[in-house]
Image (cartoon, rainbow, N blue to C red; front, top):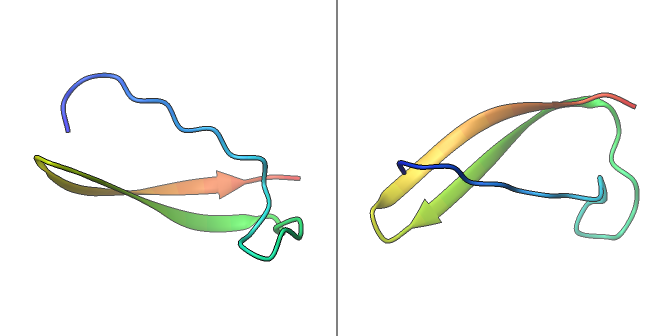
Length: 43
């Protein structure tokens, strides 16, 4: 997935509750493939 991409999150999970600090994995899927990244949420 070449090029610049931007993802914005509000730090809430699927239930709408605030997520805790920790390590999460972000998966992006597009027409040219799939890519995963590790992200750290610090509160």
